[in-house]
Each structure stands twice: as C-alpha cells, then as structure tokens.
Length: 160
Image: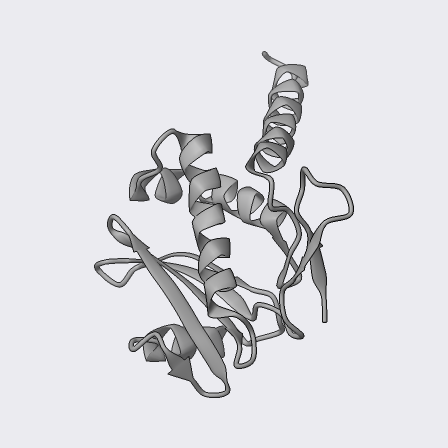
C-alpha cells in the first residue's frame, strides 16, 4: 500500500490504502457544483452524469462516496471500495480547515469568486488522487508563496 508523510514528523507515515482518490467535488445545498477535480481520466459528459447520480453518498458502483457538509456546501470524495472512509473524511476536513485558514472562515462566495485559490489549495493537499501534504502550515506557506509570486508578477507589468 501507499503511505503519506505526516508533515511535521520526519519518517512517520500512515497507510492510506491500496488505491487512490478518484475525484473530489464541492456541491452547494442548491446542487450547484462549486469545485470538481478528477484525478483519473473521465470524459466531461461522464463527470456530469456522475455528479447527477451521486445522491445517497454511500456505496456507488465499485466505489465508496464519502461526504461531509460544511454550512451550505457538501464536500464529496470518491474512494476505492477497500479504502478507509474515515481517512477520506479526515482529508475532506483537512481541505476545509486549509480553506478556512486561507479565507478566514470560508464561505461559498469565496469559492465562487476565488475558485482558482481553492484549486491551488487542493493541489497542495492531493496530487494524482493521493494525499500529499497533511500539514496545514505547509499548505498555507506554499499558497502564500504563490500569492507573493502573483503580486510580484502583477507589479512588473507595464503601466503599474
């Protein structure tokens, strides 16, 4: 199986199962998709069909659907049938905590108007369907570095 580093503890790893996260979704209470990221190849029409079909949030096809509702958003992840549901829920919670710290109590409007930041944060946490970073401090440090580079690039543009 695969392991992921626990961030602040060098050499300490935990087992995350044999397979990887298939996709991560954020859905509002009204059913609007606010973020979708597939870590495996999937046609757009199949992604749309999948989002429409996922409603019971338990077992779906040969996978497990794990979700947690935060305020008006459902954070949904699809994992392999033999993966650990609690770890998937912890991964969702970790993502939400990073969003909260970055945005200062994240809300749906933050994700609508700054969707690219949510993707940056998710990309720091999960790469190719595998948990990569469990340290909120490290995630936010990398995002702050990206923000600084963007500001620096904006300042170098002519007319500023």
